[in-house]
Amino acid sequence: MKIVGVYLAAGKSSRMGKNKLALPFKNTTVGNIALETALHSSLDNIYIMIKGDSHWISSEIIKNPKCSVIQCPSAHLGQSETIKCALRTVQAYGADAILVMLADQPFIPFHMIEEIIACKKKTPSLHFVAASFKNIISPPVLLSAAMFPKISNLSGDTGAKVLLRGDYLKKGKILPYNQLEYFQDIDTKEDYDKLLCGIK
Image 1 (tube, rainbow, N blue to C red):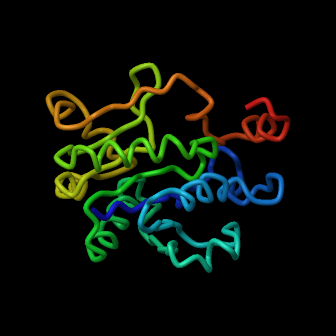
Image 2: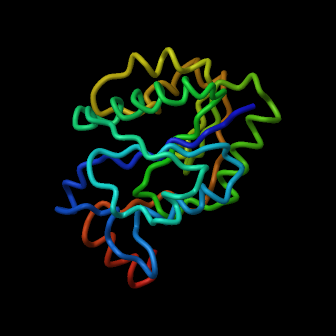
Protein backbone atom coordinates (compact mmCIF):
# COMPACT_ATOMS: atom_id res chain seq x y z
CA MET A 1 0.00 0.00 0.00
CA LYS A 2 1.47 3.34 -1.09
CA ILE A 3 0.69 6.17 1.32
CA VAL A 4 2.22 9.53 0.48
CA GLY A 5 2.33 12.84 2.28
CA VAL A 6 0.87 16.02 0.81
CA TYR A 7 2.44 18.97 2.60
CA LEU A 8 0.37 22.10 1.96
CA ALA A 9 2.76 25.05 1.89
CA ALA A 10 1.28 27.31 -0.80
CA GLY A 11 -0.69 29.70 1.42
CA LYS A 12 -0.42 33.48 1.28
CA SER A 13 0.55 34.09 4.95
CA SER A 14 -1.72 37.16 4.81
CA ARG A 15 -2.23 37.39 8.58
CA MET A 16 1.51 37.25 9.22
CA GLY A 17 2.36 39.84 6.57
CA LYS A 18 5.34 37.81 5.31
CA ASN A 19 6.15 34.20 4.54
CA LYS A 20 5.59 32.51 7.90
CA LEU A 21 7.17 29.28 6.72
CA ALA A 22 10.51 31.05 6.25
CA LEU A 23 10.60 32.43 9.80
CA PRO A 24 13.60 31.09 11.73
CA PHE A 25 13.18 28.66 14.61
CA LYS A 26 16.25 27.21 16.33
CA ASN A 27 18.45 25.92 13.49
CA THR A 28 15.67 25.58 10.94
CA THR A 29 12.49 27.34 9.75
CA VAL A 30 8.86 27.13 10.84
CA GLY A 31 7.95 25.36 7.60
CA ASN A 32 10.61 22.70 8.04
CA ILE A 33 9.53 21.50 11.49
CA ALA A 34 6.56 19.28 10.62
CA LEU A 35 8.19 18.43 7.30
CA GLU A 36 11.18 16.89 9.09
CA THR A 37 8.77 14.95 11.31
CA ALA A 38 7.00 13.60 8.24
CA LEU A 39 10.31 12.63 6.66
CA HIS A 40 11.09 10.33 9.57
CA SER A 41 7.70 8.64 9.28
CA SER A 42 6.75 5.61 7.20
CA LEU A 43 5.22 7.73 4.43
CA ASP A 44 6.50 6.46 1.08
CA ASN A 45 6.97 9.91 -0.43
CA ILE A 46 6.23 13.51 0.50
CA TYR A 47 5.02 16.11 -1.99
CA ILE A 48 5.65 19.67 -0.82
CA MET A 49 3.06 21.90 -2.46
CA ILE A 50 4.26 25.47 -2.89
CA LYS A 51 3.60 28.55 -4.98
CA GLY A 52 6.73 30.51 -5.75
CA ASP A 53 9.60 30.68 -3.29
CA SER A 54 11.02 27.51 -1.75
CA HIS A 55 14.09 28.97 0.00
CA TRP A 56 12.66 28.09 3.42
CA ILE A 57 13.04 24.37 2.65
CA SER A 58 16.40 23.10 3.91
CA SER A 59 18.93 21.78 1.41
CA GLU A 60 18.93 18.42 3.21
CA ILE A 61 15.21 18.06 2.58
CA ILE A 62 15.52 19.19 -1.04
CA LYS A 63 18.15 16.49 -1.60
CA ASN A 64 16.13 13.78 0.12
CA PRO A 65 14.85 11.31 -2.50
CA LYS A 66 11.67 10.87 -0.46
CA CYS A 67 10.68 14.52 -1.12
CA SER A 68 9.45 16.32 -4.20
CA VAL A 69 8.70 20.05 -4.43
CA ILE A 70 5.65 20.75 -6.59
CA GLN A 71 4.73 24.21 -7.85
CA CYS A 72 1.01 24.94 -7.81
CA PRO A 73 0.36 28.07 -9.93
CA SER A 74 -3.37 28.10 -9.10
CA ALA A 75 -2.86 28.02 -5.32
CA HIS A 76 -4.17 31.59 -5.02
CA LEU A 77 -7.63 30.24 -5.86
CA GLY A 78 -7.80 28.44 -2.53
CA GLN A 79 -6.69 25.38 -0.61
CA SER A 80 -8.83 23.08 -2.74
CA GLU A 81 -6.76 24.01 -5.80
CA THR A 82 -3.55 23.05 -4.02
CA ILE A 83 -5.04 19.71 -2.97
CA LYS A 84 -6.23 19.02 -6.53
CA CYS A 85 -2.80 19.95 -7.86
CA ALA A 86 -1.31 17.41 -5.44
CA LEU A 87 -3.87 14.83 -6.46
CA ARG A 88 -2.78 14.94 -10.09
CA THR A 89 0.79 14.23 -8.99
CA VAL A 90 0.02 11.40 -6.57
CA GLN A 91 -2.32 9.66 -9.00
CA ALA A 92 0.52 9.53 -11.53
CA TYR A 93 2.64 7.95 -8.78
CA GLY A 94 -0.06 5.36 -8.09
CA ALA A 95 -0.76 6.32 -4.49
CA ASP A 96 -3.39 4.36 -2.58
CA ALA A 97 -3.88 7.17 -0.06
CA ILE A 98 -2.59 10.63 0.82
CA LEU A 99 -1.86 12.12 4.22
CA VAL A 100 -2.68 15.83 4.08
CA MET A 101 -0.58 17.99 6.41
CA LEU A 102 -0.45 21.76 6.89
CA ALA A 103 2.97 23.40 6.84
CA ASP A 104 1.95 25.94 9.49
CA GLN A 105 1.17 23.22 12.07
CA PRO A 106 4.69 22.58 13.40
CA PHE A 107 3.67 20.61 16.48
CA ILE A 108 2.22 17.50 14.79
CA PRO A 109 4.05 14.63 16.53
CA PHE A 110 5.65 11.63 14.87
CA HIS A 111 3.46 9.16 16.73
CA MET A 112 0.28 10.79 15.38
CA ILE A 113 1.42 10.34 11.79
CA GLU A 114 2.36 6.72 12.46
CA GLU A 115 -0.93 5.96 14.22
CA ILE A 116 -2.95 7.33 11.31
CA ILE A 117 -0.93 5.31 8.79
CA ALA A 118 -1.15 2.14 10.91
CA CYS A 119 -4.92 2.52 11.20
CA LYS A 120 -5.31 2.64 7.41
CA LYS A 121 -3.00 -0.32 6.88
CA LYS A 122 -4.87 -2.36 9.48
CA THR A 123 -8.21 -1.62 7.80
CA PRO A 124 -7.54 -0.92 4.10
CA SER A 125 -11.25 -0.41 3.35
CA LEU A 126 -11.36 2.86 5.33
CA HIS A 127 -12.00 5.87 3.10
CA PHE A 128 -10.30 8.21 5.55
CA VAL A 129 -8.50 8.39 8.88
CA ALA A 130 -8.56 11.76 10.62
CA ALA A 131 -7.13 13.27 13.78
CA SER A 132 -9.46 15.26 16.02
CA PHE A 133 -9.46 17.48 19.10
CA LYS A 134 -12.66 17.77 21.15
CA ASN A 135 -14.66 16.12 18.35
CA ILE A 136 -13.40 18.58 15.73
CA ILE A 137 -11.56 17.00 12.80
CA SER A 138 -8.21 18.59 12.05
CA PRO A 139 -5.22 17.79 9.83
CA PRO A 140 -3.39 15.57 9.44
CA VAL A 141 -6.07 13.69 7.53
CA LEU A 142 -5.50 10.54 5.50
CA LEU A 143 -7.68 10.22 2.39
CA SER A 144 -7.90 7.01 0.39
CA ALA A 145 -8.01 6.72 -3.39
CA ALA A 146 -11.75 6.06 -3.06
CA MET A 147 -12.11 9.75 -2.14
CA PHE A 148 -10.02 11.16 -4.98
CA PRO A 149 -13.05 11.77 -7.29
CA LYS A 150 -14.80 13.72 -4.51
CA ILE A 151 -11.65 15.74 -3.85
CA SER A 152 -11.44 16.61 -7.55
CA ASN A 153 -14.83 18.34 -7.26
CA LEU A 154 -13.80 20.68 -4.44
CA SER A 155 -13.58 24.40 -5.14
CA GLY A 156 -12.47 27.59 -3.42
CA ASP A 157 -10.70 27.83 -0.08
CA THR A 158 -12.12 24.62 1.34
CA GLY A 159 -10.11 21.62 2.41
CA ALA A 160 -11.10 17.99 2.15
CA LYS A 161 -12.49 18.17 5.68
CA VAL A 162 -15.75 19.48 4.21
CA LEU A 163 -16.33 15.99 2.77
CA LEU A 164 -16.07 14.32 6.16
CA ARG A 165 -19.57 14.82 7.49
CA GLY A 166 -22.94 13.12 7.83
CA ASP A 167 -23.23 9.49 6.78
CA TYR A 168 -19.80 9.62 5.14
CA LEU A 169 -18.23 9.56 8.60
CA LYS A 170 -19.19 5.88 8.78
CA LYS A 171 -16.73 5.14 5.98
CA GLY A 172 -13.69 6.24 7.96
CA LYS A 173 -12.16 6.46 11.41
CA ILE A 174 -11.47 9.44 13.66
CA LEU A 175 -8.58 9.27 16.12
CA PRO A 176 -9.05 11.63 19.10
CA TYR A 177 -6.13 13.50 20.66
CA ASN A 178 -6.36 15.54 23.85
CA GLN A 179 -3.37 17.84 23.33
CA LEU A 180 -4.43 21.20 21.88
CA GLU A 181 -0.82 22.14 21.21
CA TYR A 182 -0.55 19.42 18.55
CA PHE A 183 -3.03 21.29 16.37
CA GLN A 184 -2.01 24.89 16.98
CA ASP A 185 -0.80 26.76 13.94
CA ILE A 186 1.46 29.72 13.30
CA ASP A 187 -0.75 32.36 11.68
CA THR A 188 0.15 35.63 13.39
CA LYS A 189 3.16 37.41 14.88
CA GLU A 190 1.74 36.60 18.32
CA ASP A 191 1.70 32.88 17.45
CA TYR A 192 5.32 33.10 16.34
CA ASP A 193 6.39 35.03 19.44
CA LYS A 194 4.83 32.35 21.63
CA LEU A 195 6.70 29.69 19.69
CA LEU A 196 9.99 31.49 20.29
CA CYS A 197 9.21 31.88 23.98
CA GLY A 198 8.41 28.21 24.34
CA ILE A 199 4.84 28.91 25.44
CA LYS A 200 3.39 26.63 22.78
